[in-house]
Length: 143
Figure 1: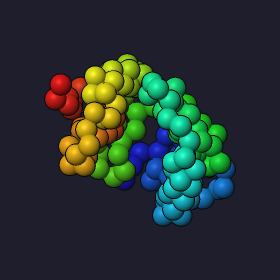
Figure 2: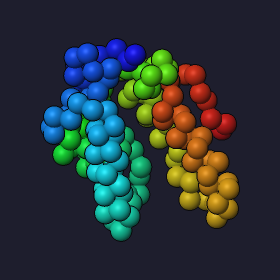
Figure 3: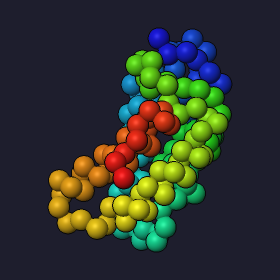
Figure 4: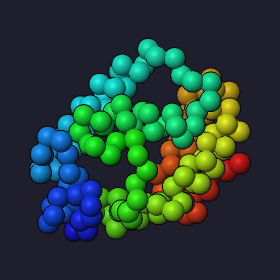
């Protein structure tokens, strides 16, 4: 079972506190997916900034989840694990430096724009996505 913290309802097994009062993990997950899908669809026609950085990522997170969470777009300040896996996400003290490093690596990779090969694009994207999601220091993409 996931340990509860200040972001979750007590004894909920990790269900995030939310503006809709959803305490069922499946319903909250569906609401999150619906909102994220709607935002991605709206963003698909918006121009992408020349520089992809931490503040842009925060804006995306805020756009996606501000209708559900008061803390959307803010840096998490407690340890948390990936669902019921027991895998610890990046520790709060390393999030900002880890993201700065990830965006540096992404810039070196020309923000993935230097390839027309779908397989190469998917491979390179997965490396950066993995780096974003996993614990800082346990995954190092190839340079």
